[in-house]
Image 1 (tube, helix red, strand yellow):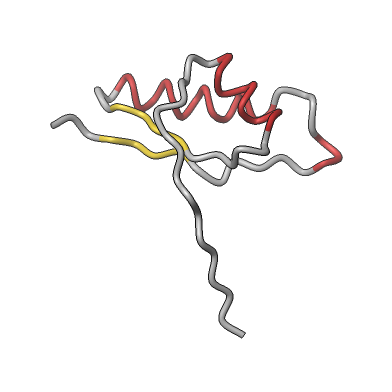
Image 2: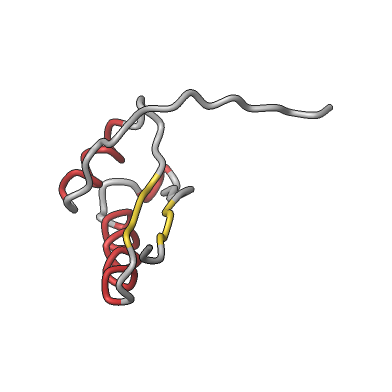
Length: 74
């Protein structure tokens, strides 16, 4: 099986959104993965519409949906 690179936690501070930073970072990591012969996957929340738009523009497709459960130990 080829190596798999998982991309996650790509965030842009609200003051800097809309400038293409997420696209630049994600496309650079994707290019490195593809050059290395790896497959790439990424995680994104369903309500992150702007992020999904960027990822689709880079060629990513929805393969499935999973429920996320967060635990905060206090």
